[in-house]
Picture 1 (cartoon, rainbow, N blue to C red):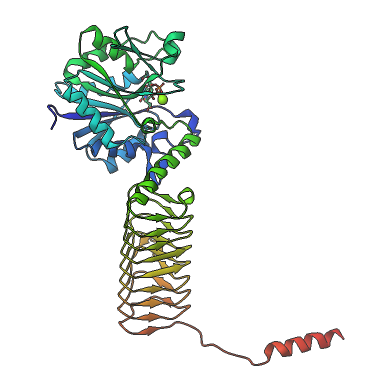
Picture 2 (cartoon, helix red, strand yellow):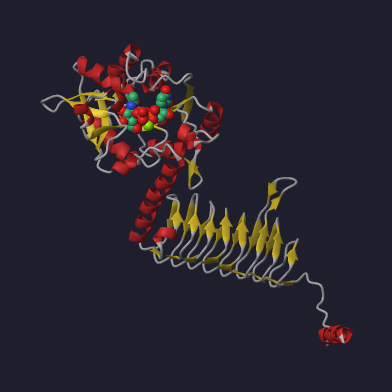
Length: 437
Ligand code: UD1
Ligand code: MG
């Protein structure tokens, strides 16, 4: 337990010019989840933070609407115009009057930060009874980042931005990661006294270090050991890089837990997917969102699991199969070319190649459920028009379009009767070649 309560401020007002997009930077997604959501989840999953303030500016309404719908404990605060990171945090001060606890400041564009790191960071701050802790990291190429400046006794005394740094300061490899833990009662007065007389004419959050040192407060840095965690996204190239880093971490963890991933380089799995041991994931599988996949399954190659799938044990999801928001119980096979959406499949169900759950009505925009109970099967190329239920052990014949519920053990078939015209082709050929003579 910590000595104090913790709140967070997430900086997300910047424009993100280099994304070259109409979408605000922090709403760009990795595995269908916005960058800002990764940061807010990491903060919330520490279990220390009870309330967050998201500083919004560029495309504020869109960011605010995302935050409102998804995070009950977060409040958006408008910063307009954007006068720098110090000004951004200052915008939250009216909401934190008389707050006697810690405030963590993080950036909304660093999706790789983990809750473990934030937790360790706050605990480090708390254990040392610090007034201000800055997360730092050692970068071989620190270009563009603020440098951690120490005096000759190695005491941390300031952060200097690259644009304001002397050549000696530029040579420093310890950089400011942009994550802070602030003892609000002792340090928040700094925000009123920030100046913008620097190379960028901005109010720098980093200047609170100098302020706190001047007041003889306890200021320290916390050196991060995994630099990837503070990787900030500024462009779509970096967005792709972050996706790769996150994916590598996820697939490695899954393999360590006993999942067989044949080709980690072409397999994409969202970090919110759990997979049981001895499941085999074949190449070119793409899994986004939150899913649970059981043991001994075989997924892929070329399968797409889109979100909200709960898949049991010994399930086969084969090539060119898409699964969305569906429950699939043990020992069921969906082996080829199917779409399973908003469905519940029992156990020992066999889905024939090309079966489609027609779940969406584009006129009413309503999505409906398909239920296929234990032991039932569908023939190739059947269409199940939802809402519809196929009871236990019922059999849908190949090529059927099913528009009403099918009772247990029944055969359902919608097919025009087969007609065979003997020698019809032969007659045509003869007619054709006769005409040529
Ligand atoms: C900042 C730090 C730098 C550090 C780096 C780490 C300052 C002055 N410098 O620099 O020491 O090494 O982060 O990545 O803080 N933002 C606002 N309102 C503003 C300005 C920025 O909300 O008025 C937000 C941005 O959207 C972004 C974050 O604050 O999420 C950081 O701003 P950015 O402009 O990227 O700061 P850096 O120059 O990278
Ligand atoms: Mg930056």
